[in-house]
Length: 317
Image (tube, rainbow, N blue to C red):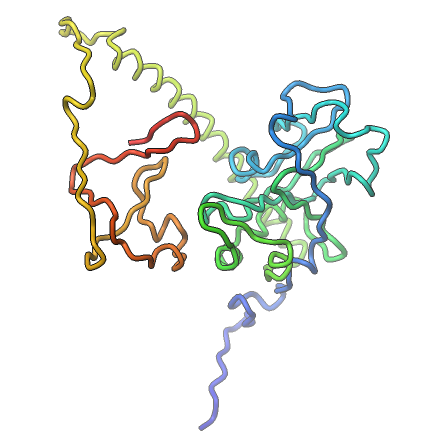
């Protein structure tokens, strides 16, 4: 029987699926070369400009501040490294490689699968001294061309993200090694198409950022109003009676019913965004989602849950 060859007009089949015929499908190591990074912790950083004026990109900032758009050195707040940690006279490319426009800074650790290899591309650097820090990879485009701005999206392709999740290791924190990242195949269009894609996506990023700023302002106003109303400092029209202070235990009791291995309940994880299906929270990782559910808390409809551990002092319900 004759084999059937699958074809798709204008496309070619690669390791990562169908891509346009004039696109390349090549490993990360053919596109980028890794630079040296430095493991200084948060307590070595300052938001105030220091005499040495060495800026330092921490992996936490990539997850929270820089992952959605380009890291614009002319307007983004990059913290400074304390003076005398690095001898400024030794600030040479061999010892302390100064980041350049177009370099990619990648977080090598994340608490969830969605944040695996969050990255940002730095731009609008002039004479600043900037280094990449703790739990980051810094990568510079090599002889294969990457258009300015396109590198910011090169690891955000759905096929690439799927592969990064597959190779991530860990239990509560997930990471990808340099050697594994080097082998991940990237989608690389011709330079003119890269430029157009980067232009379109960065325009959307700017619009999203503007709306996010507005949302944050509204959240802050709501938070202030909420505290006024929930503490009785501001009373609504028609209400004037005294408030009573009572212990939470008077109205709530712990529900302690546990599951057993024969139960088939859906499993949720508690997050800052609320309850999320565990398969979604962990990116479908079978190492986590296929575990025996014996001893899990059963949550009946209309019952509340809360996170018993908090990294930011807030306990989410």
